[in-house]
Image (cartoon, rainbow, N blue to C red; front, side):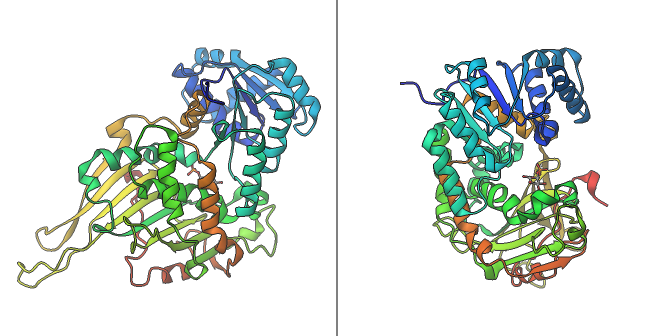
Amino acid sequence: MAVRGGGSADLLVIFGITGDLARKMTFRALYRLERRRLLKCPILGVASDEISLEALVNRAREAIRASGEVFDERVFARLAKRLSYLHGDVTDEALYLSLAEQIGSDRCCLYYLEMPPALFAPIVENLGKAGLLERSRVAVEKPFGHDLASARELNSRLRAVLSEEQILRVDHFLGKQPVVELEYLRFANQALVELWDRQSISEIHITMAEDFGVDDRGTFYDAVGALRDVVQNHLLQVLALVAMEPPVGPSADDLNDKKAEVFRAMPAMDPARYVRGQYRGYTEVPGVAADSQTETFVALRTEIDNWRWVGVPIFLRAGKALPVKVTEVRLFLHRTPALAFLPSPTRVAPNQLVLRIDPDPGMRLQLSARGSRSWQDVHLDSSFAEDLGEPVRPYERLLHAGLIGDHQLFAREDSIEETWRIVQPLLDRPGQVHPYEPGSWGPQAAQSLQRDHHGWREPWLPKSKRS
Ligand code: BG6
């Protein structure tokens, strides 16, 4: 029996093709796939704007040029030939009748919903009513729910019309090269396999810092905040890949089972180990409430209560308007005993292993060497761009996976619900929000989480970003 929602799509339908995500990410990703000759099907854009196909093609061209891609007219011409456009109101059944007329019910479509989350379920229900889902898949962008109850409700509305195999929950961090690479690095290298547990590792830090504010996204962001925006999804998904056991087979479920086990072993987070900050000036951003208590910075401590990780503190921090844009995972190894063979026994700094996710992905092992006079850090660094070549971009990777029906890079229902369960106490009891200066590392209160630990470290920056 054929798997529902399996196999390559023969039509890509993008809801919201005139929106921001399409302009910033989707057209570029499609263009890159076209260049690599990985696009095989036509693309139908759907949106409420009454524009001509020619206008859509022009938007696509501008978006791709503005993205900094080397623009090849011949590649673009091939992509443009695939495009068609249907305008209509996604809450109106008439749109789905026209869709059905245009595409028929026998297609294996990938419907990509680049729409406000409140519309995910209504669109899917309408597609179902029009008989357009039988052999198709649906990809939905984040945020998937705004708490545990709403995520469950959304899952159950989608599951009423679709099987789990037909749903692709997009988290673009899962398409980032170093995040994908984690599984290979961890399990293909005995040198790392041996280090990767509580016997060797004493702490895990994950930092996602951005050096810009909320800018033009005030209305969206003020209802969301940093915890929902990037921790419940991006950072916990990364943590699962850092912490999981090796998958026992090649299927997406083999991988997702191991990630889900990590989440299941995580206790719900403790509000006493959670610090929220808001950068000064945030409430002046258009769309933000004048008395907003929304956080633009979070720092927290959590744990994974299983055989591999029990007792290893895990620190996450994420924020806007910080000094740099960098995302990294930092593992601290245990200290060695004092070095008794020196005239005065000395303790040296613990080794660290850093995976830089953005920018300029790479990996670093920090060792200690004696140097001529004092202890010095020695770094064994790999820049993935230099060592592995130009990476596939996240949306390019995710769209391709969606088109061929590969679920590895998408979040499964159970993981989404588990991650909301884990952060739910912080949503219920958020505590006060501490102001911080833009360009600083967040509020002072975030330091208190690190008392008796290694302290938040300056992230490892690419050479071009070091001052
Ligand atoms: C998005 C968040 O999911 O991820 C943004 O909504 C954030 O607030 C962005 O800036 C970061 O993504 P990237 O790929 O630039 O690290």
